[in-house]
Length: 362
Image (cartoon, rainbow, N blue to C red):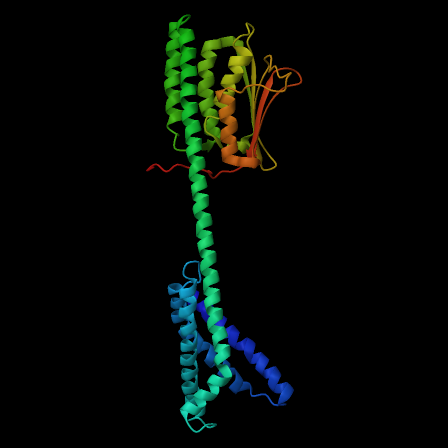
């Protein structure tokens, strides 16, 4: 494919200058040698095509780059006239084979001298152009390689940061759930035993997927459902959970363990200290190419009269993960609802192919 493109380029070169020769002949001679002019330009161009691999080899051996510039310029200063003379000599022989033994000159050498006088400087420009194009393509290729390498390094850095956040989240999730079991052990041993069984099932489902930073929303909701079963045992009628899930969003990829820390936060700060309990509203929808997720409780909300509050592990971890995964395309908001309670809302582009995936072998 590469050499086919190069061949077409040399053909285009010949046709371009053939048209120029036609115009000059028509303007000053009044007569155009259609066949002879085309043959001469095609012959000269295809001879350069044959020499192109050698010229490209010279370009690779003597690149025009810092530290090698003087040496390379010296080498090309000798190579350019050398290849040029070879091209002209082969052209004279080939042209003589086509039109007969040098009809306009006494000998091969006289014909060679005549063509050298006429074509030498143009041949130097052709050699220089091939070297220049070769160097430009090589510089672009190296630029793209460096750009790709930088992108890969950036991706690996983000993966490492996401892994660190995930390793922070798993113990936090486990210890808080075990704390729920510990609280229940003082009141209802049988219920605590059921909670431990649910915790075992939940951990198997959540930690088995630790190779992926994103999972399908449907799978994330399964993890959340097991967690809510544990908390339902603990709070019984004091906890009411309502879900509003858009079926078209179930295949969307979302950060693993996205909902659990947010629901845990809502339970801990919005419901746990209330004798009457409370409600949690969980929403997920697909809208205008975005996935919008929301967790809302009817608790006291946040005291943010000074405009600031300190986020705990769950909120800060979730915010950081969204930033690493989606950058400026994602959003994360924590605010008090007008009718009371706290709202945690996130949005990011809908997608079904994972952005980051850690290979099992690593």
